[in-house]
Length: 176
Image (cartoon, rainbow, N blue to C red; front, side, top):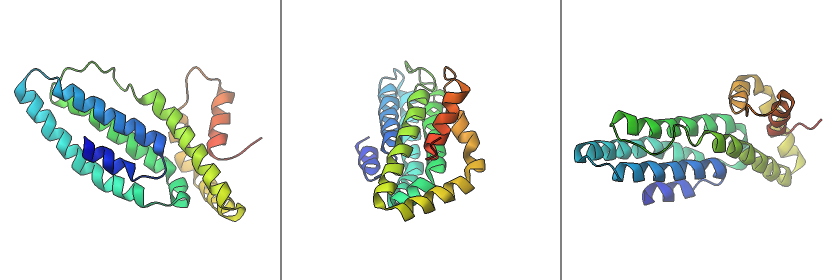
């Protein structure tokens, strides 16, 4: 687990989502270690090791991005992290490890983290200068149709449509 935590610390942006991934890795590993059956535990630990192997190139890629590229790829990165979180959940099921963790317990915090990370990147880009922000913002707006389903996926069902629309516009840096 220390290796994963160290690898994830190299990522400068998307820190809220990365913290959820790190925490979920830790929770899954604890569940595996609490497994009463040695064969299931062994298989799950092998699966966790394979997961780390799959995760490493993603982490290297995310760590290499500057703020501009991180902003442009934020929805892809969020999708990649979500797949990793789902893969961790599946690891327990595939190895018949009984878990005390509720299914997708990371989902709601992940939606909030996605918004917070986006806000943080907007602030960083604006601090770097108006031209950089305008270029990044324009590029994201051009591709928003592609990523709109991802944004809507994080819609809080207890929120009104107006609140969800406001959140989406906020992620895009649009104020009304």
